[in-house]
Length: 141
Image 1 (cartoon, rainbow, N blue to C red):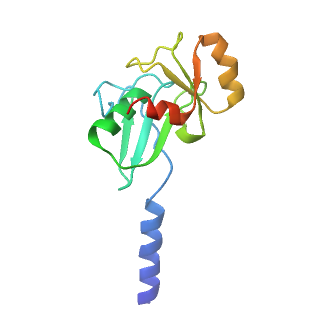
Image 2 (image 1 turned 60 degrees about the vertical axis):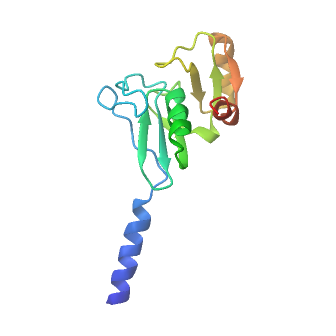
């Protein structure tokens, strides 16, 4: 019985430590960095710390500035897919565009796409420059 209880507690602790994002509640949650209400589902972002804490942001720029200024140990970064309203995806797997006619809430002006095909299609439409996640991340050092 004692070993079953230990196994059950271990399973519970492991299952609580998720690598999945928590949906952003638009128009009711505030950005951790700038404190503005997160309202635009195309540009939201989220991170999970090594300790399992979730922080939400209204713009990729806010997330990265917060990370750098607070020396946060990040487990995972998530960004909203520009084409899928308020759908968080793993930042490392995304394709990014910056500048042009992209107007994000805090003027980071970065849009994330789930596929390179979508990125290339919108690169011309938005007159923006393609970037990788590493380039986006490094631009806020």
